[in-house]
Length: 385
Image (cartoon, rainbow, N blue to C red):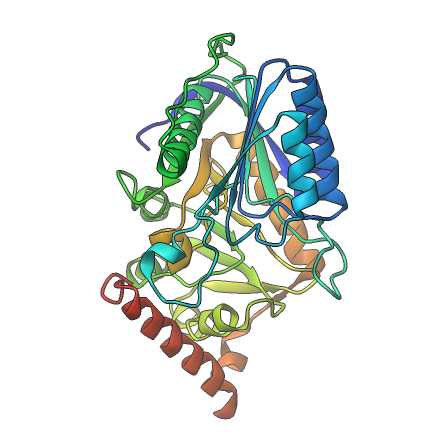
């Protein structure tokens, strides 16, 4: 795909048990700059741990900037924020008006990305918020999710994007211009053999970049497509691409949320199962814990890890960020991890059994899908999905 840069090293991090220790280690080693963008920053043990690491970095002279979403982080303790600011952490809130009760498009445009940049030499991109893996009541074992740690020439593009977004939010809220830290040089030397693209979705120049990256990879697939996505509600073009891939002999597998977390999206997604199953797409529901992953592997070479779900919220409204990686080693590592998850906590949806469901079991998914389509129409996207 366009935008791939070679010479990078990408490491897969599975769930918070791998991600948070790696993140804290990078924060503790920082000397110049830390930028952290997240949808949720919670007032729990994990939030306190990351806040303490950021505060300590700021106190030793590191310039620390944190950007959170006004809705996703609306429950964050003022004391935790105040403690970080007192330590010197710069703090901004994306769309502080967190009300979603009025169905207006701008209120649904949230900061959903999860990106951390340290000293212009290491970045973390994925789907993991700053929140305990066990925050959902009744959740055992921990939430299943991914992030990636990346080093190499791709950092130039990540830095540009991070600085641009911080500057935009700062100017919008305070009409203050921001200047980059001149003390630090971007580390662009070769770090590995992975080819990487940093793909974002915003409401300016990159409205459909993530969706287009998926579509290009799916239409070019030759043997395997494996997608794991927490909130899967794709448009017709996306569904048709998966079915066409299956028709030409590609094994297409979806690992989707089995537990009910957000009822509307959960049941609306299930209303699409019949079409996908009839088209030869294999669906596996993950029941062991809450699935929060937004990843894919195609042909044991192409992979993506990021914050973007395959639903109207992520692909049409929210600010998202994904890494696209072309690397056999990385793709195989992700594929193996997903296969273990399916074997250990997944249940295959049988096409025959799905077709024979009682009529009353079909009502709720169809009603949910109808409501989602109505809501999309209310915010002006009815014809685009």
